[in-house]
Length: 601
Ligand code: F6R
Image 1: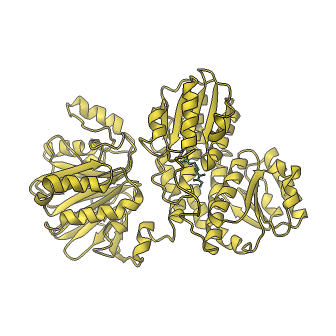
Image 2: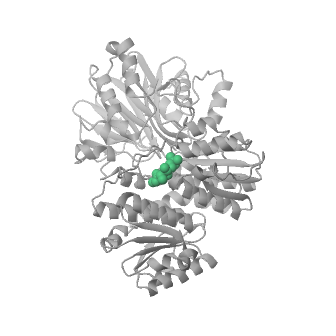
Image 3: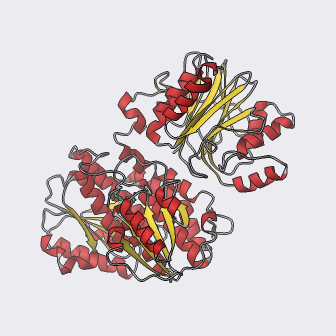
């Protein structure tokens, strides 16, 4: 996810504060970076790649000359347009008077860009962000003061944003947030805004957490926070107590836990601008020229393969022929393909060698390809005919969590698009609610207490049926990856065909039971079978089928559309795996023998 830092204070220190801030934000992941320092004029420097590239540009050209009492800086994680110097932030207006850094997605940027271009404004990047400096510049030209210009411009924006803006000739910084994080740091004679506290923690521990639609002005006299109407808001200044090594994790003990808790935000980002609440439509610009494939084949590995199994079920349930294949098996036993087929590679990294080679195989055999990925400009994205970005933001923990839930939402968008032109009122409504449903799971989960009773167990089984089946597999994979305990996931119906032989009083069974009807009823039958062998049973359920009454422990999820309930159940299983691994003292963010991106076959 992009990182922002803004500073107002000592002119001689602005550049070094911004560069230190950027390096403190590196943990969020980024593919380009830039700074703008303001005062009488405005100096902007930005580069694709690591911070070193920016530093080299500054050293080589203008570094010593850049000073001024106010500045903004940014680490970019691409969403609109690949990582290039032009697409890096800050973005400026045509005169170079206004510089903007942004975290989030401007949903109506296309319409705003068309409007501005019709007025003759020339754009220099492919980003959604660039509309903002042009809008601010237009307001300045209309005679507004800088603060009023920024306020008026942001009123035009739809979507999610944390913005920091500097205007040449003004020793002040303006910032505003809407559905994207922004904190204010209060120092001695200096103040900061940032996406996250670590950006400025070396200089101050006093912070103000901003709420949605609050507007900040920082200048030499200090800071002012106002609401959307311009009325001053009283804010509490809190002192952050975290230890330095926790800061990149925003106070969480592990990146994995932080990323599990980021899911409400990452899911909002995934659907941002893609579901219309008014007409109940799914609209995904990237898929506009996709056509209507005869058959969809998914290729993927690991967690992404579980998403693939889910995606294939979604499409089949909607009447489209679809199958999921392990990418590494795909070339060995190729499925029949015709030119009307679509092959979808699901890969959060976009770099998994097995998945790339399956996509190349499919392409070579004449199929159209689509990459469902998190990384803009990744190999899968570049080589495929179409790309659907899941916008989960960078994931640092090796075990995939937020990328999996965003893959599931991405697959719902794809299915809605391929099957009914994207109109499905109920799904759209429930997709809009999925972030708060995940938040409810995070707030109320008792997973930590449940696992406490199983620390001496011999093995762990996870079962589910229908849409719950891929989640059972994923629950087991996550569990084994980070606890190093034996865990097995299987389709509930397979129980009697073998795994039941392993079930004892020392093998807890996690049964995922969501929705009502035949599948839930049958899984409850399987729950009774394992109970009869004295296995402790944990049911992860939305309560619809009343499965909880047969369980020793229940992990609840809110009721939603049957296609989204497994996503919520999976959040409970992520927490189960995490808390067990924490209890056992495992290396959670970097499990032994595993890598985040598997670039060899
Ligand atoms: C599990 C995990 C792996 C990946 C797999 C594919 O937590 O992260 O199983 O899912 O290596 O990776 P991507 O999605 O990058 O292709």
